[in-house]
Image 1 (tube, rainbow, N blue to C red):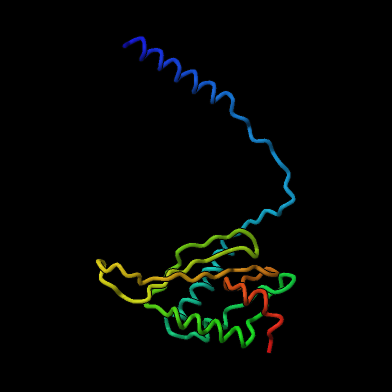
Image 2 (image 1 turned 90 degrees about the vertical axis):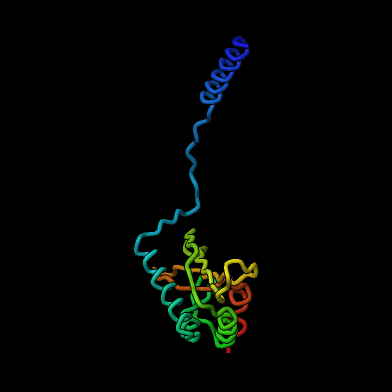
Length: 166
């Protein structure tokens, strides 16, 4: 029994030594993709806008919240929502009015590919009640010409905005 334990110990040590010795060192690569770095000021500005958006929702000022929203147009231009999409977005926000809004997460990837997930508590429930009382709403902060804008994850708005202006 002692021989088997000794044998297994020796084999384990050898396997660990071999696997550690054969690790390939990562080779430096050159990438043509830009590297995005965001400063504390970027995060502060995004949070300021998100908090203002939440403040409008909490005070039932849907118009104020909608007026904060923009869309990313052709050539990465930023434009305010036209009246058709303002009404559409206002209806969406009215349908998810809640009693509490929380920032669940912020993910910053690039100037145009970011997300802020808001958790919305729609109504109070008993903790034992299995029915859902929450939903999520996503904002997409976009940095354009050094300034941050809030846009929404809405493919129709983002792709048809230029064709549907009043």
